[in-house]
Length: 128
Image 1 (cartoon, helix red, strand yellow):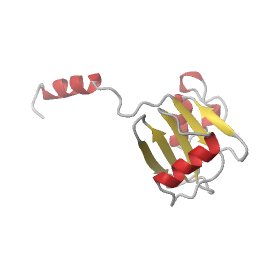
Image 2: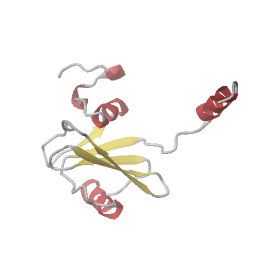
Image 3: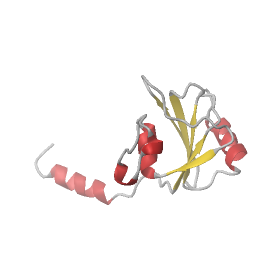
């Protein structure tokens, strides 16, 4: 890039709003078949959480906990994203009757495959 262009582009990028606003993150402990598409995942969200609320993200893992899908309602439509770990597993609760609310720091740790339950303030992991 030509000199000066990066600073202009970086300045513009810094002023842009996030593409998808997420106000709450919900974790389902019941496994989801990773072949499920948007409609099936949305039906599961409605069944488990009662409704897909705007600006909420809903996380599901497969039975082996090495794949995850995230369904986000952005207020206009829904987005479905998938994540797969090449090795290891996501740290996922096993109590099928439970749903959990995650902080942004815990979500970031979960997506990386870290022990998100032990992440405290400022991203500090307290227990392994």
